[in-house]
Image (cartoon, rainbow, N blue to C red; front, side, top):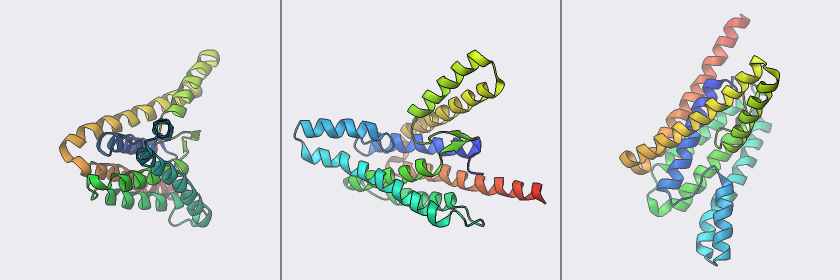
Length: 220
């Protein structure tokens, strides 16, 4: 239920929106793409701008901490069937991002830390779509997998391999849609734009319930 394309699509839209939100509105910090933060952190240290270094260090540490918390939730709740552990993670993420929408720009460091934390929980929790490894909050791995699948299809002409490449391309497109949507909504709603990310996460949350109900009906 957590690996359907529909669930992954809304997660990816949310992921793209979060990255656009923190970079455009919250001081040019990447919520998801920690590689960019590492580059900017290293540059700041080289320039001896230590205040700016902290600006990029905090999201990095928050991302790492988010991975740990998501894994602890999985270990504690993965055997509970009536309420999936991944849905618990989504609820925490929604609550965190709702709170971020109330933070004025003077609290950008806290806002970026919370968004990075929630992004890390998401990328650690949702790692497959239709059985394929993927990431809903960044694109580099998805692009590599899409191109690899296309090359494999050129050699084998297997329809399943072609569908796999389309799946990855669809996820990349959804991320781009989220990023573009985030950039547009910021001009209209400012710091409240992050609440649209909460909306997409909530849709993913509900999609998991719908999928589960269909599964129960087929078993009955």
